[in-house]
Amino acid sequence: MSRRVQQLRDHDINPCVVETDASRKCMDDNNYNKNMCTAYFLKYKSCRKFWHDVMMQRRRNGVKPEMPSAEERKKMLESMGKPY
Image 1 (cartoon, rainbow, N blue to C red):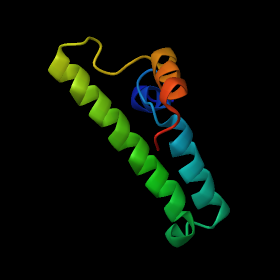
Image 2 (image 1 turned 30 degrees about the horizontal axis):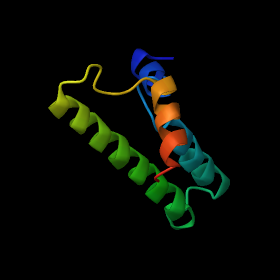
Image 3 (image 1 turned 135 degrees about the vertical axis):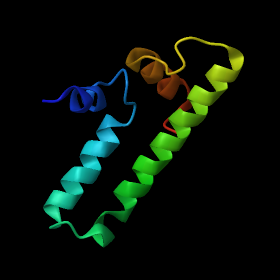
Image 4 (image 1 turned 60 degrees about the horizontal axis):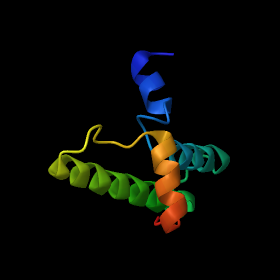
């Protein structure tokens, strides 16, 4: 597995691994018919937007690291409910 692929699979780097996997599985299951997977794509897009906004807010506030760790993200989601 290449270094880039490993980074994308790392839950500390990519907060939307679950949504990515769901989208890919839908595409595999539906013979790559994108129309059948729209809901999965929207959920992935919402996930990316949500965590991008969190990262940008943390950057503005000077919080390091800019992307919360997987454990920290899990606590955030539990406290607010899944926003996406």
